[in-house]
Length: 373
Image (cartoon, rainbow, N blue to C red; front, side, top):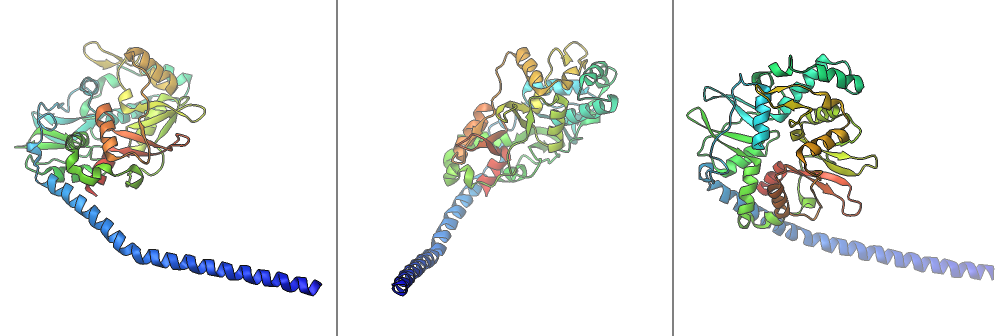
């Protein structure tokens, strides 16, 4: 009986093994058939992608930047001289809601921009030099004393270009929108000075081209429906974050070190609570006294925790928290263009739909690069 049972069990195992072999064979057969079909499918997909790319590039190649609406490229160019005070430069940026200004001497460009990260880098450098402790109460007291004699005397020429974030890439008015877009896809190139007869006659920025794309979505073809999960993004991983309890000076230093103008503020639980950016270095009562001549008078706010710093900013401006704008992997370039343009932002965080954790960042450069890819 034992031998009979063993034979029966052996027969069952043999049958199971035979069935498994048959199943593996069938799976391999299907895989081979699917693989045999892949090349034509992939070829068609490549053809569609190439056709879409060619159509967009052909469209942009026919348009000169001088033909773009004046509200995007032309109009009054705001500039500043190397001898102007640094505080004046920042005030101009704040009043006009811009992040950089070309530096010109007697109407001739000096081949450099000054932007908010330049100013921030210079302030942090001097603050580090003239204080012994920026991350505690002593730092706040020292920053309050270190004021007019130093920051009030800073000039534009001392800070312009120190962050290395805005290289000077001049273009002529007769270049095409395609050439402009290709320039703006390069790292750190956020704006192009349009120079004619050695004078800056206009600026074209990543935002300008995104506005133009949004107004002509029909010319983007299939690119308008390209999803974030299928895009190639410049920054790998989640956005730069700072904690509510971090000192403001360390948060600004993190922006400079990372070479970015945006970070997400997270609370003790790690949840994103608001946006923190270079534009938060804006003047208010505790930071910049707006009398004449304009001068920095008290930087003690920089030693406060980010949460308190942002609360003071909200109280002064009477504005609510600035939420971090988000998208998902299924968001399209069409969706992103709408968000960027309507909310006047330069970055959008990519979040997981299940737990809403930030998994990536889409920038204006990413939009341009993927439209051209």
